[in-house]
Image (cartoon, rainbow, N blue to C red; front, side):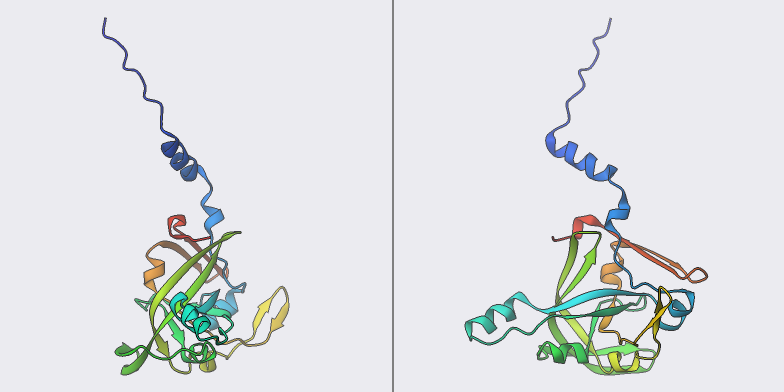
Length: 198
């Protein structure tokens, strides 16, 4: 009679991985800007983020005993047409950033020379997680100014128009599932939890 194979007991690492897989994905939903179908159509999908100076620049400023600029908090447009995320020039200016390079960029209005900034982007995810992206990002001229076109109706109250502080591109969306229901005014983004930093 053949012997039964002894079942190997899973390691603690494997148990933790299985527990993570069993957790509901809802806990990793990106906090999208509340809206209805009209606002979603007029303004497009948006999430609230925080822009901050890079750790390298912050350390440099502290060594020089200079003030570290306050982070810029505001909505960014979820742009599936953009390969990389970008920062509004107005936001870069408020952070006191200087261009580290320039780059030819293309869009619906043709090609142009754009500034490149080294900056940090923090995306709140779930109840107590953040995803941090620190790196080079293109500056978009007049994005914040030109996007202040519509108020936002939330819970029956119209908020003042707020311009976009940047664009969220596909380097983030490639790690996420995006649900856009224009008829119901529903925007939902669920991100890969392995990318989070607390």
